[in-house]
Image (cartoon, rainbow, N blue to C red; front, side):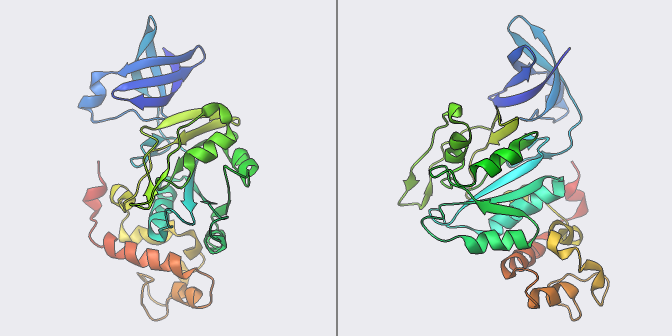
Length: 292
């Protein structure tokens, strides 16, 4: 048996990087019967016959996500542009919540700051304890910091189409030569230039370029119970046990320490607004829905 990591998945083929190189594999039929799908980032054991192989075993995952479909991610780079497309704070916060729930470190990377000032976005997430900074694949701003975060880790880039994910990756490692797309003036967003998830070895680690998304469906695929939602907003942590009443929803209660912190400017209004919208959605999620 040979151990390796899945670096690309496409139409039922899995490309496994091992010591001898990259081997094209199919997965055993038992995975389909068990309703298990091998994911990019999975550590696997394979058998090899000639130039091809078979994925025989998926080693234990530390985490996995459905959107983007990746496993064993250490850091999720959420790429946000200041314009074209405009930032959607709810989408950003849902993505952060999904990462936090999975034990993945989120980082918010803001692009196109030359077209419109994005200082408020960076400030919002740094205040929340989430690493955030400007980056540009054109000027090189923030590229060295991105490289340092990738080193020794498996990371993934995600965000709306057109925010510049592939452009940043090309600046990080020009040998990748990823396809980039133009912004559709009619739609106000980028055309999907990344068609599948692929893991690239670079900067002493791995990074995945993932298909862009433009809808509010991240949270639908990563459901969080309303009781647990407070724990994926890390800036709430110092206040959660200081509310007057147990079971506080932190949305409108008298004596809520989170609301007091919001009033005092210790929690960003956009973050609390996202929390409240997500809390309303989470009311309809039942515990049994989280079971696979």
